[in-house]
Amino acid sequence: SEGLLEHFGREHNESLLWGTYRPGLLFGVKSRTIPEAVVAGLMWTSISKTGARLDESNFRHTCEESETKQGLKFGFSEHDGSSYGKQTITDPGNKVELQTYFLKRGFDSWTMRVAGSSSKGKKALYFYLGVDEEFSASS
Image: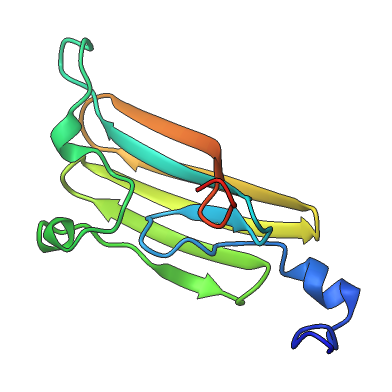
């Protein structure tokens, strides 16, 4: 029996390998590989005035309703559904505005760009890579 997606060509399937397939995150990228997917994303927070501690109460990574009530704004203003996306993230809790860009250069290559500004204090911005084992046999 032929699989449902087998009639799509290899080029089309490869074009969907990477994308912004991570709902619930302010910015995230994921591969469409099973059983394990490679994931990437951004996190940030403010740093205390002494520089000794991170402000754990204002750590940003996920899209939380309580944070939107405090003025956090995000969402793609431009996205073609497969290879390009642009968004502005306004985070008044950390006094940060970020612009994120996602550009897929080919089936196996993508670029992320982050630009931003902060109106007060030092910030910590983290870019991370990981493996999502949600669909692996060992999970």
